[in-house]
Image (cartoon, rainbow, N blue to C red):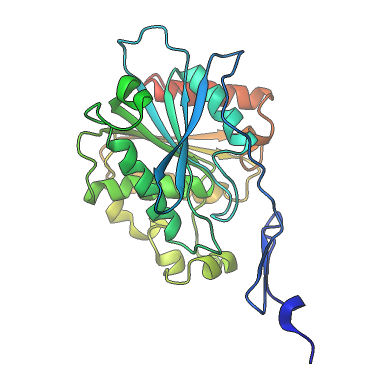
Amino acid sequence: MASNSTEIAHEFFPSYPLFRVYKDGRIERVYKTRTIPPSNDPETGVQSKDTVTSPELGLSVRLFLPKITNPTVKIPLLIYIHGGAFCIGSPFSPNYHEYLTSLVNKANAIAVSIQYRKAPEHPLPIAYDDAWTSIKWVASHVNKDGPEPWLNEHADFDRVFLAGDSAGGNIAHSMTMRAKTDSLVGVKIDGLLLMNPFFMNDQRDELIEYIFPTSNGSNDPRLNPASAVNELVGLPCSRILVCVSEKDFLKDRGVAYYEAVKKSGWNGVIDLLEIPEEDHVFFLFKPTCQKAADLMIQVSSFLNQAFSLM
């Protein structure tokens, strides 16, 4: 009898190759995530460094600090969660490193880019729990006595923003909802920024079924917030910006999220920004194009409370 070691049990290639699972349980990651070290960017003056948030879980974050001209002034704090279908991606990858370097420079904000363990080796909801662990680590600096000097010295904990793209946008929403019941003492979540967020709809999603076997699928408010509209009224932030792209297959789900929040009666300001003729997370893959530059201006303005739609 032939060995099962070469027989494929599951294969997930939704829009790009993710991973294969063989019948003997072996996982082959088809997509390889490249990483780069932190740096001091000579063009912008933005510094970055990595630090461990949970030695037990093996979790780290990458911090980004803009050029400081007045050390007495606190600056907005952006907590960013990367995308990648909950399975790939890293805060240490070139795309995210370069994007956050540019955003931190443009917005004059300090950023914490969060790592989480990825499926399928670590099925959901582990990614949610890992993100919350690092967010609590960030919140431990609110009294200026945490382990990271950049956060102690420069972060304004009255102007905290949770943000993410694709699956990271999903996690960012879930973390904001979690802050409603598991309070971050001393932290004011000013805004939620969702960039081409992934949310479920009524369509079956075989990848989600595999990597989140304990969920209720499209009836799980973590995956599909629109399935629990009444819960959205309690979102503990004052502003939300949802960015969608015209050619993105997830566009309608981002729009549905926007409409669900409005329908909920949430007492805040939510805006929907659609970028024409662009696809999913284009700003990461085409960062020098004009539409990416325009979006960067809008996101920077959102972080500095001067938002206006293009």
